[in-house]
Image (tube, rainbow, N blue to C red; front, side, top):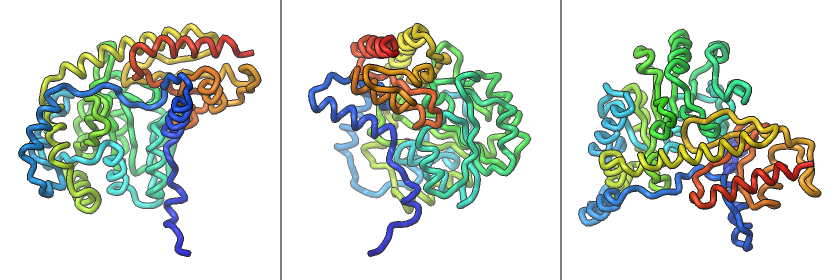
Length: 398
C-alpha cells in the first residue's frame, strides 16, 4: 500500500481544538459548560460589512481574482497599516492570504529551507511549532516564564540569534496577552540590527486590541533600517470579529511579497470577491464595533485578573492586550481535587472541565506546562460564573 509523505508524521492536530471538541461533547450531553478555550472574538462585525457583502453579491463576476489581492483590499490594508504607524508601504509590499495561519505557512515556505532555524519565545502560539515541523525547520526556543512576565529580554534574543534564519515575534502575545512597551521594542530592535542575516516576522494580529493606553509599537519605527527584512502579519479575524471570513495580510520587502504571491498562485489563487468586499468594508468603514469591543475586553481582563490575584499560589502577570490571561497554576500540582490527583496542567484542565464545567487550554500546548490559558471572550453574562467555578476549584484542592 502507498504511504503518506514523511511530513505528515510531523503534522499534529490542534491541541486547542481538542479541548474545544471535548467541551462541545460534554455540552451536547447536557452538561453546563463555560468555555474559556478557543481564541475567537465572539462578536460580529458592523452592519456596513454585511451591506457591502450584499452589494458585492449583486455584482459578483464569478471570475478569478488577483493572486496578490484586489487593489481595493490592498489599498484598505495600506491605510490600516498607516493607522498602526506603519506608513511607507505600497501595493508591491503587500499581499493577502486565507487568514493569518495560511499567511504564516506561506512565509515558512518562502523563507525556510529544510534544516534552517526559526527562533521564537516560549510561551508560543501552537501553530508556530506545527508549521516549523511540517516544513522541517529546526526551532530555537527562548523560554520566557512568568518570573520575567512572559517577555523576551534583549540578552536572550542576542544569545539565540546566531545561526537563525527567521525570528518570529508575536506582540500582543497569544497565549499570554502580554504587550511590549515602546522601550522594550526599541531594546529588542537594537539587538536585531546586530544580526543582519535574520528575517524578522512580526505576528501583529492583535495590534488593535491593546489596553491601558500603552499602544502598539514595532521594530520598524524603532529602527527604520529593519524595514528591509521585516515582515508584518495581520488579519481581520480578531479586530473585526471575522475569524471565519479568513482574510490575512503581509506587509514586507518587495521580494518577499512577490514570493508570497507566487505561492498564492499555486495554493489558493485568490481571495473570493465576496470576502474581499467584506474585508474592505471592515478595514475602511466605521470602527465603532472594534473600539467598543476593545473597551469591553479590557473590562473583562480586569475581572479575570482580579480573580487570579485572589487565589493563593497562582501567579498571573498583567496582560495588556489580546483577550487572554495565562496564569501560572503550578501551585496546584501534587494536590487532589476530590478523587483526582493533579500532577500537571493537563490533569488540572481535565479536572476543571469534568468537575466544574470550565474549559481552559493546558499551558503545555503553548510550551509552558506550569500554566493554562483563559480566553475571556465568552458571553459577558457567563464570565462571572466561570470565574466563580474556577476559584471554587482551587479552594477545594487538598
